[in-house]
Amino acid sequence: MNLRSKAALGSLVFLVAACGRTEDEHNGGAGGPPASGGKLNVGGSGTAGGASGEGNAVNTGGSVVLEAGAGGSGGDSVSLGEGSWDTALALTVTESVPNASISCPATSFTLHFSPSGSDLKAILGRDGSVQLGQLIRGTQSSPSYSVGQMLDVPTRADCNLRSIYVTELTLQAWDENGDGIADSIGGRGKASGIFIVGDAGRTVELSFTLQGVPDATKPSLLAPKNIHSLDGVRLRTTEPVALTSSVTLTDTGTGASHPLSAYNASDGAFGTFSSALILPFGSSWKLSATGGDLASLPFDIAALPPIAVQADPGLFAQDGFESTPTLSLTGVAELVTSVGTLPAINGSQSLLVPQGSSATLHLARPTGASSVRFTAQRLMGMSGPGGGGSDVEAGVIGGSERVGPTEALSTTPVTSTNDSVWMYAGPTQVLTLPLTESGADVVIRFAPPACQGFCPPARALLIDDLRVE
Image 1 (tube, rainbow, N blue to C red):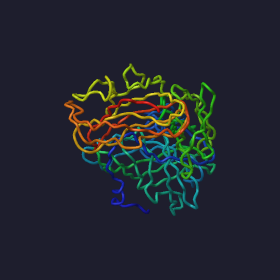
Image 2: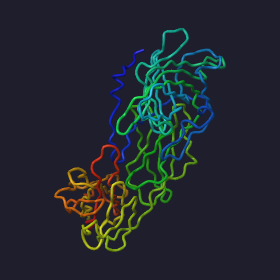
Image 3: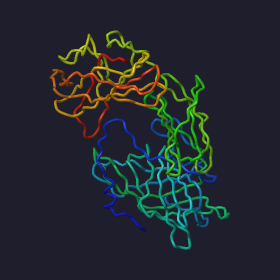
Image 4: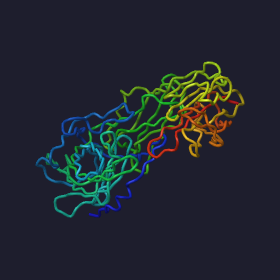
């Protein structure tokens, strides 16, 4: 077996500075023949491989119970060919790290094999994640398979490990009914998990047993329950789906349809369908899909509710926040008359949007208008450089481009505010966001991102004189 050394694995340990709203997943899909089997339940208590995060769909099917050992139930060991498997790992921590509280007794995923000479190509996936790997057939007369390099196992809400990498594996398949076709798979091995302690990634060592049955679980979609107009649409599949698959959104009010783009064909399977379309406030979109998973099982999405877009806050008066404005606020964003001894930028009040909060506004676009403009000040928890971004984006409803200011918001020179939280302010500055697409309605969101880990000084925006011109 060609295993990577612990030194090589150490390159996977990293520092995390999670500042902002980011998510980076490897996604994809491919095709395969039908099979039979069911969904995995681990240890008889709880479902493995279901939805997580913002999803509102879970897999359904039969069950496999992980026992103390891994293996068949008396059948003959046979070679593996093309096929998909509902697979579960029962995990045991064999070597932990200080201050690590590992809670990951099991994880599950869909595993698809396709022949590559005497070896097997593998596609592993769940909840939008698609990982690729390869298993090497051994030379023994009883067919068995091992890993030639580390195999990335998709993990989500059922593990507080950032990732799991299989480093050693002995896998076999068994023919339970004597027809020469594998009815179950099983094995055991070792793995390394990445656990986050503060801002550092630490490696923990694991052992596992593996069991699986032929995939009989129809794929579904993990869809957000309520989305912001500027966020676009991103739907994760509960397992990798074939490259022939497609997903379409249909407006329940107008009947207009919009196909989604799939990611990533080079993986041999799709795990995510998305669109950058800036959807109208308050709209509702029904999902439809063609194709299915790598076992040729069709999508099961008939019961999914429509995707709802955030309600319209109403048209903003563009009067500098002087009248009672129509806007949507989250967190501790608010209208203020002053911040400490710092007065409103103009008139009697300005909009304050601290870190981790947001303000969304709907603006009418006059004929010929080509930009959004506003006056802003950066507020800071301490004096010094950093945090110069504007933390704002805008777009035309029905378009697909998000635009930011043409220049950064300055933090110097600094003025003391005598406020207990936002003690310093940068200069006032007029910022412009060019509108690059046609359309009569504009949405703008101010949202200084929350930060965890190694962060710059706390910051906020003070905003006034917002208009489209």
